[in-house]
Amino acid sequence: MLYNKNGDGMKNRGFTLAELLGVIAILGVIALITVPAINRSLDSGREDLYETQIEQMKKGGEDYYTEHLSELPQSVGDTACQTIESLQKNGYLPVDIKNPKTNENFSQLTEVCVERVGVSEYSYSVKEVE
Image (tube, rainbow, N blue to C red; front, side, top):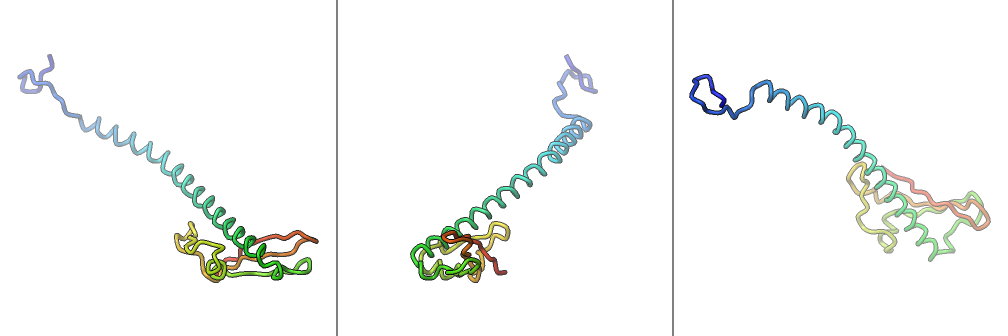
């Protein structure tokens, strides 16, 4: 049987200061290891979502120019652009496309451009406007 300092036979069920400090130190080390890994994972997720949003805008531009063939660039190296606002008004893009890096909607003046790179080849890009 354990005796406390009074010798009355009661068990001591509390933690000592050293034990509590040890647990706090271990939790601190675990936090130092996991927090940077979690932040890297979140940053990677934001970057992936950003790329997905850019691809969605390019797809909206492709859809637009598929239905408006006369607006496609005629010569190799020429470009044609549509603003996000125009693509949204015509139903080619959703109304609220957020930039995950800033957590705000992309500017309505951001352009989705198509460049003629070959006889029947086109390249799509997004030009962000702040």
